[in-house]
Image 1 (cartoon, one colour):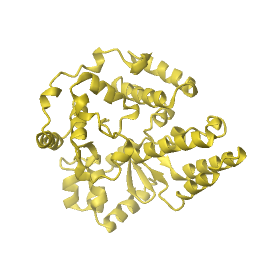
Image 2 (cartoon, helix red, strand yellow; image 1 turned 180 degrees about the vertical axis):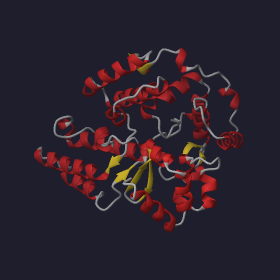
Image 3 (cartoon, rainbow, N blue to C red; image 1 turned 30 degrees about the horizontal axis):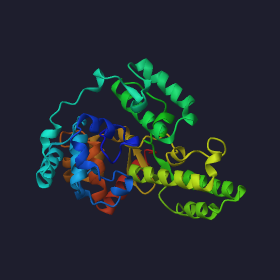
Image 4 (cartoon, one colour; image 1 turned 90 degrees about the vertical axis):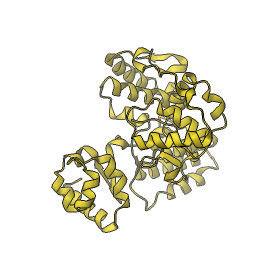
Length: 333
């Protein structure tokens, strides 16, 4: 997973970055890294427009993106070219990033680095830490929960260790069911009425926002923004007293399924497909539904590149997208 300021829960990577490259601090001290900063930006505001990552719309964010890039392994050359161009345009001295990034494998790993809590040095530590985090979940602050579960997923990938689906959910990597989200707002409305809170009507209005919409959401900046807003609202209304009793906390409310967003792809209205399943389909399937010209783009080496397909599919004519959805539905996917 490529991490930048658009998807850095608890800003754990940002703290590492600023510690590694202290000269960057002055360049980015006025940067807004909240989800609302990126939500309405055009794709052209990102060095990686297809994934809407590494924003370069301001000097501050270009400096941040250059720093985050130092920790990313697999980034296309055109992304690096865009970052270099942004550095030239904004007059950013890239020598401040020349310091070698210390490999994580040689460092002490803590799931909450600032507090040096939950040390992990092996695959066994990962599984034990996962167990402890779930046990101590309610005792951790929202910020510590997010950072700890996020780092746990990151280190589990390094150790090739499989985690429980619920762990990905608490790290904020899963899809949102809008039906379940609507029900959660309705539960909050009832709880607010029970304690005489004036926020009952506001919860009802928010529940109504999810009538007639797509059955799922996998827009992580929007999901994080929604969870943050809901946490503020729950504190103001007093509904937070019911967390882990009759009402799930904001993170569990928004990230309310166990389907990992990065493992799925939106095909059409109401359809999500597993990327691994899509990759397993024969090339002739894609030639039939997409046509040979498009297949040359999504399978240049004779094998489907799902990441490229995910970028191209939304740009195709409606009839082709409908055909893809219809044909995949025949598989029960």
